[in-house]
Image: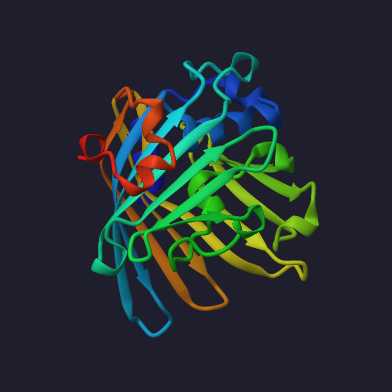
Amino acid sequence: MKLIKTLALLLATATTWAQSLSVEDIVNRANLTAYYQGKDGRAQVHMLITDSQGRQRERRFTILRRDQADTDNLEGNAYKSDQQMYVHFQRPADVNKMSFLVWKHLQEDDDRWLYLPALDLVKRIAAADKRTSFVGSDYYYEDVSGRAIDADHHELIDTTDDYYILKNTPKDPASVEFSHYIVHVHKGTFIPVQTEYFDNNGEKYRIAKAHKVEKVGSYPTVIQASMQDLRSGSTTVMSYTQVNYNINLPDEIFSERFLRRAPIKYLR
């Protein structure tokens, strides 16, 4: 498997202490790798949506992310913090200048806003809508900003030579459409390589995968990923380029004011 070989090359020093990690340790490390590496970051993203009939749509946008915590240290979960994310769309023309803003909170529901330039309207996205399609793709809003790890019960159900396999069950089943999801976490890098979502009948209906990984500085980074909807037959692939960490993004750009006036200096 090409991805496994790539991951092995990125971190060949598989450590013996990893064998004794608790479920909480594994979940925290996977969450750090997926959403919190570095104090902030930027990436250019190409999104390709392919429906069941092979018809394709594209999106191009820039993601900016800033953590409130000033450290990635795992001790005492110091890396975990509130977080802001800003997404600015460039293509196609019908989404040009559209922006999406998230204030991610650990102790309460996230705040999300979407700016629609054609209407010059800032739309507040209700907490109940976090499990709905992100700009017509197979990703949900919550997939993009990250699900709070404290929202689920976590269980280590298996281990292989390369992966920890975790079962995650929502603490509030009424707030989501899934009964549980299974995550394969790579032992060396702690990258969540595959996530499978199951409905209340036990049927698998969504699959998220990491396809390509590169090391950006000291950070193992997913540069191509996909989300597949098994019910509709649609798949969305996201490819990341020009990924950078620790670029000193100012707090002020993660505000409603900059939804209407994009911070061009930081989007390039």
